[in-house]
Length: 375
Ligand SMILES: Cc1ncc(COP(=O)(O)O)c(C=O)c1O
Image (cartoon, rainbow, N blue to C red; front, top):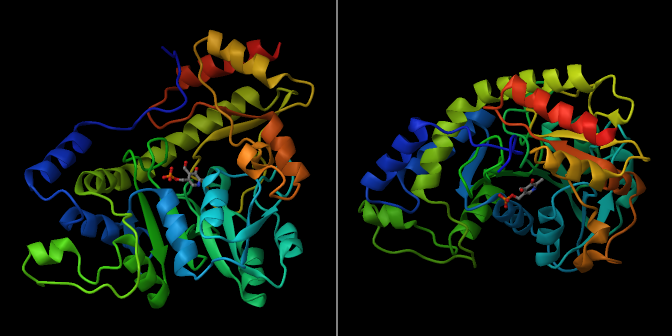
């Protein structure tokens, strides 16, 4: 249907083989592949971090809030420009929240000054998102959370392979939640990872993931235990062996895939830098190494975005919007504060196709279609 679609999987026979091995093992729910995936992810983040593979990124973020004891009566500061999961999980634990605006039209990360302004006596946690795989200002955000005694939760759905001053994103806060949804830098279909350094928080996360059971089914299958206790209530946010097997392969491919994304993004820059109707966020500065999760651009105010989207669609190019303003969703109208900079970006942002198997010719097709749509 599309000449260039927004995202394509970076899969080959390695993923097929990995899933086949998982199926052949005849043990489908969390088992050895999941343990291996968690170990590999811990090494990837730095061994101080303990990792728990889960069914999706939203589950990891929901568990993160619960593991930090956030609940009714508490306030959480969440990003104004993010996927709705951050807002939804905050609502689900019964907390209220304040949205922190982005920094500027070039820097779409949460503004530390705005975070500080949102703090009240009820604030218990700050949830940040590293938009598009570009690091937030972690020196300032970590300092705020330490000074004000707040939990810091990193939404790392966009970050695998990205760092801040050389330190992997996801290792600055109390808990990080990664997503391995299809269009992410690590794709398994549906999947995620929760990571924590503090042992008590890690234990809370582990209890929450699987009904509060003290012993997983795999240990009983292996004869290592006969029964289990429930020490605290839990959920079922488990991953399965097929997805963990995919995650292991995708993790191995990550460096090369992110490098290819970088080359493609540089080609986009060479085609779009001189276009006056476009601003590219994070174009002229960096707080670390990004992983080029998506290719966002900001259209000039006078440009009719819907017309551009429709024109590009006619030329066979799929685009997206990251993200619609939270204030515009029926569920959250009047429930969240106004954040003018993020709302402006929501109204004028356009996401162009980007994926590691994309060709430079496909980038040219996208740019030609975009320029035509702008004219
Ligand atoms: C910024 C952000 N946060 C959270 C999520 C939720 O992840 P999942 O779809 O794996 O639940 C996503 C995924 O789309 C995301 O992009």
